[in-house]
Image 1 (cartoon, rainbow, N blue to C red):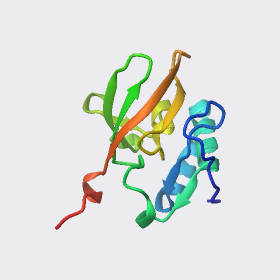
Image 2: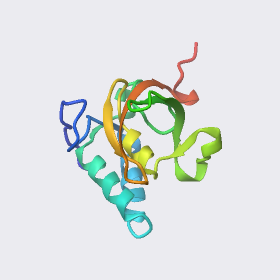
Image 3: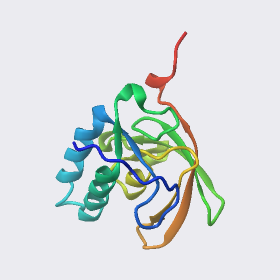
Length: 147
């Protein structure tokens, strides 16, 4: 996967906020996006756009405050003020009732690679545009430092 540098802005409608991805997962993400083209072309296209502008870093250099698979992320809907905490997961592990959001959903694609404090515009399935802000990111249990 080609490494690119993302724009420095944290809030833009056109290209979106900076995103950083784990190099160990980048090829898998790209394969998933390409495989989804026939089933969900809108998600596939959006995911490929995000991957194309992402900064890819080695796993050891992925900042702890960046949303990746398994992390818990709290985000706020700036319109309603509502906050929600979810875990971003691969599709096979998704369970909305348990707060596990699939990477291959519009919100999953939008959250991947964002850092705490990043704001982004997100179109709901009904076409409504919302401004969401990443409030906090907590590492997945496997990334929690141990003594």
